[in-house]
Image (cartoon, rainbow, N blue to C red; front, side, top):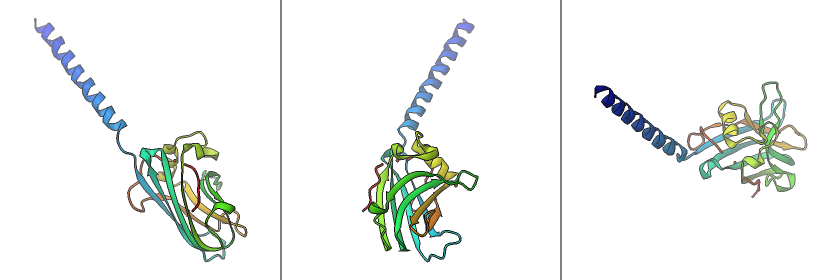
Length: 180
């Protein structure tokens, strides 16, 4: 009789643990994913440029896309706006191409551009990966925002993307690059 009661109690405890685990997994999977990241854009080392700028990234739609906003002053002829990933070897291949010269919105002098991107827009070392990999690279200090110009094809102004700029950022993100 004691052994039978022990098995009943043991089965009840296991059932309760499974129920709590299922509830926890459901809560975790429906948690809202959000975050804001920013970069202060300054002249590239060795540049005599006086240009400056600011870029922000905001995770939207529970990690399904990332909204970007970038503004700059004092630029030459903009040839592109990209986000790159430092690979630890001095190389920083592009992981998102946000805008090219004709659509950048950042003309000679000052301007701004905004839009969204999703995981399907990831290129280079992040191609085929999730936006959570992009955000992990931000949290690891490896993501660089660059505005390229004709005189500075590797970036007239650049800045490391870090968590902050409105909220905390520690999860996932992604869209279609458009300029405005």
